[in-house]
Amino acid sequence: MELQLENVSKNYGTLRALKQVNYTFTEGIYGLLGANGSGKTTMIRLLCNLQKPTEGRILFDGKDIKKAGQNYRSILGYLPQDFGYYPDFTCYKFLFYIATLKGFSKKNAPDRIIEVLSQVDLLDVKDKEIRQLSGGMRQRLGIAQAILNDPKLLILDEPTVGVDPQERVKFRNLVHRIAHGRTVILSTHIVSDIEYTATQLLFMRLGQIVGSGTPDSLLQQLDGKIWECSVPFGEADQYYDKFKIISQINHEDGCTLRLFHEGKPMEAAKQVKANLEDLYLYHFDKTK
Image (cartoon, rainbow, N blue to C red; front, side, top):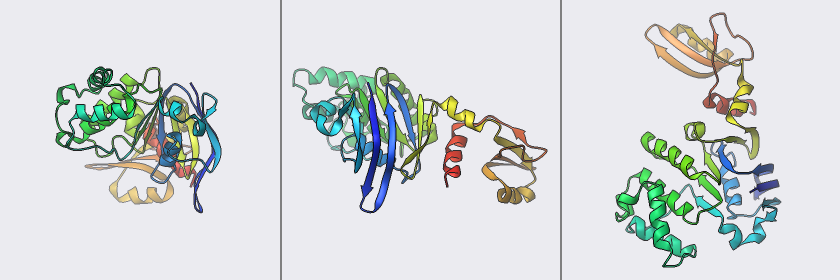
């Protein structure tokens, strides 16, 4: 299975939201990372065929999705950033409604609904009104409606915004469980959402992909560039003027600074292993 973007651009009036994007998605979990305004949501809308490219085309297994119509929608599952629902519907009733929209027969819908409710760990609350669910449970219900048609392509747009850390862990585990045999595209600006989930990463900035690859291959870019040093409180400010500081951790007798530098920045600095948060900040700093 291939989902291919060929020279895709998208304009909103004079604003160019995407700029000549080329990329091919295959089976796996893709983390699409970028700050607000980077072009992530525009790309998601184009991939879901909710909007049309200004230039270029998007192909699914060699066929333009603009012309595929229902054939493309039948293999697509989508959880938008603002997941709409009827608060007085029960989980089961809501999924039955979605199943009807997706063309399920009344005979086949019940078994599939029970199956997906089990997959997302909501079977025990299937008769509870959606208004009574926690934010995390509602997001899992959103994933349930997205996978109801057993899609080959699953797109999740900012799925953990406003969700507590415990629910984010459940979400990551759920994505792993349902990803086999699918292409999953997870758009987020929360690094921890994809740190233990994605097999491929794409970094977006100003409408372009500024970095892509496996987490390990991308982290190799930072070999020898991430350092930590302990300094007195009174001296910390001068290092902010000299170096790109990633973080500061305060202690009783001073603070530890984590920073980018091509070579050893000072005698007391120690080289440390890079993580995805370092990589995220590195990409968006170097493209300014």
